Amino acid sequence: MRNPAYHLDDPRPMQKQAPYTFFLPDSKSLEALEPGDQAKLIFVPTTEGTKYGAERMWVQITEKEGTTYRGKLDNIPDDVPGLELGEMVEFEPWHIIDAESDDQQKDKNLQFPRRTFYERCLVDKCVLDDGVKVHFIYREHPDLTDDGDKYP
Image 1 (spheres, rainbow, N blue to C red):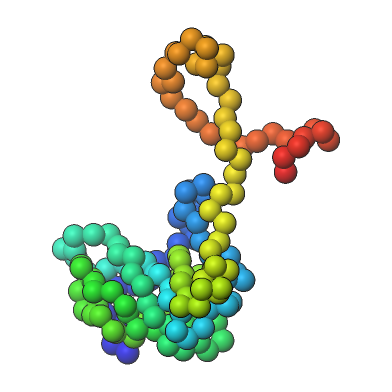
Image 2: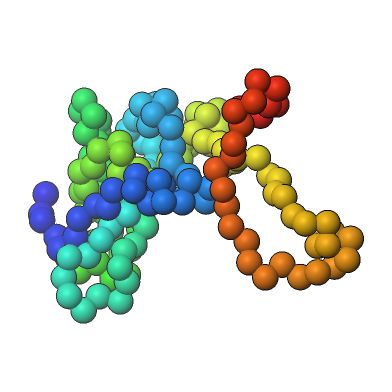
């Protein structure tokens, strides 16, 4: 395996910063991956003068040894110098941002939940009844400390 001018990004900090919009596969889905499945990874070029900060590309898994995966790059890189279609890539489960399988039942199980929050918000009566425009919006963590709270 050559050492091209890139590193694989750790998506976990991005998920922590944007938990409502950036989803990652759960550990069960990652454990189920095997040779023949595909994993999407974030490749970050380490050379200067590239157009993009990163590229998200698919890798066809060819082997799994413990928690380490190896696979062939299944995309043509646009702006990662030294990386080519079919090149071998080594990665860990926590590098994976998405996964797919040719097995339809397994692929269905790889579909991780996309909604982890309640789709509701509070607004003033003037917005609902009088058509007053919303000029800003912000998010608060729910305060569900009463014993009668319905939502976890």
